[in-house]
Length: 240
Image 1 (tube, rainbow, N blue to C red):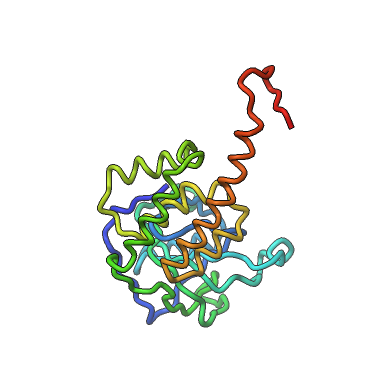
Image 2 (cartoon, rainbow, N blue to C red; image 1 turned 135 degrees about the horizontal axis):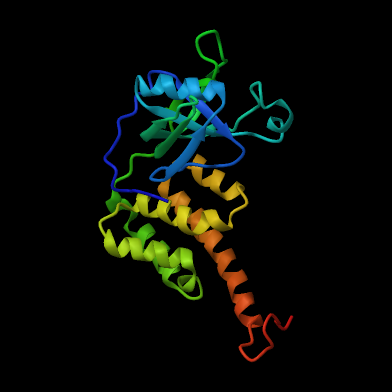
């Protein structure tokens, strides 16, 4: 789900950000992520950020250490997505339901361990996204959209939803369009590695290349499925 219309949010990189790591990429810029916060350390984290800037850095665990060392500080990948809490509800039992809007990519420069005042991890971050003018991405925009409109990809539900959204918002900047395609088409078919590559890549043109490479692979699988489909075959049967 995405909401590219949300107004620009200011991010102050002079202070550390709270880290909320999960097993895979869960947030990208322009995405809106619903979260249920129930662990004590993360309830404290939400309380703290609601009293200040309202921003959380969504991180990704590196490797499998989190499976057996989750309660401590298992290793994380260096790229994160800073998110802004846009809605929150504190429940009677102290848990929270929040909506987090992805703001920008960043890289972990230094991590601060939990202490007496902070039960959660924090990190000093630096932005990794290039400040690009949309005029320099005209060709990138055209190439990706032409790819998305080609069959059989254009007939998939994800591509249809993205193209429909772009019909309503043709003025979207190219980086936002790339995030929309990532969320609507790439994310449902990705095992996690591609999404992380797109998270850690600060150059929009390079992200477009990764997206096109992924879409070509998806198109190949769709083409194979079309070849095997026989409308006259018995129900549930395909010829292999």
